[in-house]
Figure 1 (cartoon, rainbow, N blue to C red):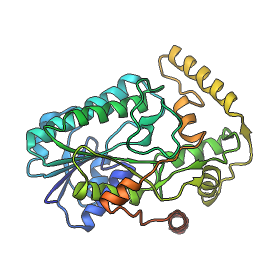
Figure 2: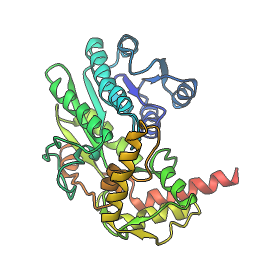
Figure 3: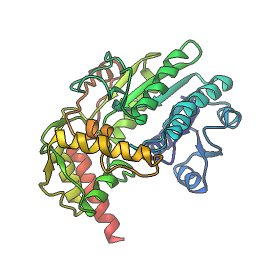
Figure 4: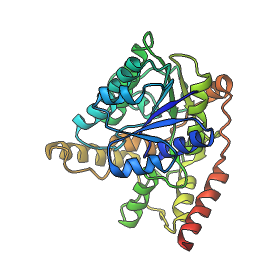
Length: 329
């Protein structure tokens, strides 16, 4: 790895990836569309290239001399205008791919998600042979699945490897945990059917470990699930993270059938309002957080030498220390 280009460098995964590349002394260029994003990337050792996913010319110029692209940028909200998901997750990925081909980049590692399987059978110990569903129920999984399809279709032109971490977490999370915390503070949090089902998880540094190994050892055109190892009980894991942050999620629970009705009704109302209103519960969040979602990462462990060095216990202890240090400042 001579020189890397990173999209989404100011996001949760991107920040941790830039820090890892800095520790490895890999010269890195990070795409940033705002002053805030630029500062976050520069503070982690990257040379900043101002621009966004719409600008193929700017990205191709910034990728000059890079042999590797890590594509981490994505629109990850569970509900928004479908056009935004299409522009960022699908067209944006196509633009990154076009820029990389133009710049002569050797390999592209794409950060995807287990959510691409939503809309098919239950995601229970799913592996990489599971086909993508034809009709995903929401734009997030649909757009991320479409991005995977276009990358695979381009394998004759570009060496692409895809990783799919499940439930990314860790200290400094700016995506998943804040949503749970907000729901608890607003009195809206409820477990789905008790919450005592299994879930795979992937600490953010394990995600980075998997991405770096995919860059080095991944087979062209292949996909790799990444997890922390054995699945955990969803309720116990989420409750522990909330407790660390001084929040009690309580024992309130709603039946899954009722939750499905709430999600479908809320989405119908949101569509009538032109997607300007976010429903309290969506079908995609129900499928990803309201029932068992477990994936098999043996392929990554066998082919890449992936370990997942940060255990759930270690990650939770680190989260507790980070919060304590923040409170003491």
